[in-house]
Image (cartoon, rainbow, N blue to C red; front, side, top):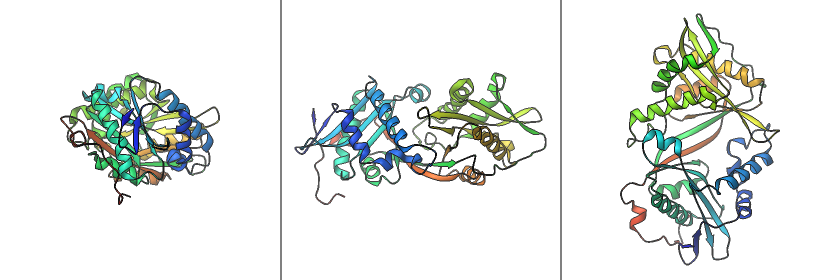
Length: 346
C-alpha cells in the first residue's frame, strides 16, 4: 500500500464490488452520452461498464489505483492503460485514462492525491504522455487534473440523433453519388484523411509531430476500411473519391446497440459543395435500418462540423474536456512531497 497522507492511502488492491458502489454514487457521470437516450437501457450501460472494468483491471499493461480513507471507504478510482495504437503511430509511449471516478463528496485536494500517484506509476512504467477526457460537468476532477500539471487541449462535443424519428435531409448533387468504399479506394481515402483532420486533440498539442498526427488518421480510416467500421461510404464525383464517412454499430448487450460515426472527411477542393451533408444523410439511411441511436463527436472549434451535424438534425448531448500530461523530464508533481488536505479546498 502506498501512503498518501495519514488520512488517506492509495492502493492497487480494491474490489469490483467497491467500484460498483462508486458507480452507483455517480450514475449520471457514468451514463454520460446515454443519460438522455430513451432507446438505451441505463441498467445495461451500467452493467456493461462494470463488465468492461472487470476485464480492464486484470490486464498487465494497466495501472489501477484507488484512494481509500481511514474508514476504508473508496473515495476514487483511476485506471491508466498503455495506448498501443497511439504509441505505435506517434512514436512516444502513451497512456490513456481509461477510467477515473470519485465519490461526489471528494474534494479537489483528495482527488489530486490519487491523480498524483497515478502519474507517478505511469512514469515508472515508462509512459511519456497521458491522455485523459473528463465530462465538463465533473468540475472538481477537471480542477484537480489541471492542478497536477495537465494541459487542456480541446472540448469534445458528442451529438446524438435517432435516425428513425427525423426527416433525413434529401441531398442530390450533380455528378456525385455515394458508394460503399472498397480496397481499391484505400489510396484516395488516405489522401483525404491526411489533410481533413487538423482540429484534433493530437494536432492541438504542439509537442506532438504534425506529420505523425496526420498519419494517425490515415491509419484510422484504413483500419475502418479493413473491418474496424461496419461500412465506409464514399462520395464519388466524376468517378473520383472526394469524401467518406465511417459507420459502425456497437453492441452494449444483446438488446441494446447504437451507431457511431468515427470519421467524416471531404477533400479540400470539394468542401462547401454539400458533400459532407450528402454523406451524412446516406449514413443516417444506413443506420436507420439497424439502430435508433447514432452518435458523432467533434471539437468545439470545428464550427463547420457542428453546423453540419445540426443541419442533419443531430443535437448536442455530452461535452468532455481533453487533457494531455507530458511526463518527460521531472514534472512538478514529482518534485514536491505528498499533498495534504486543506480546509478551504472545495
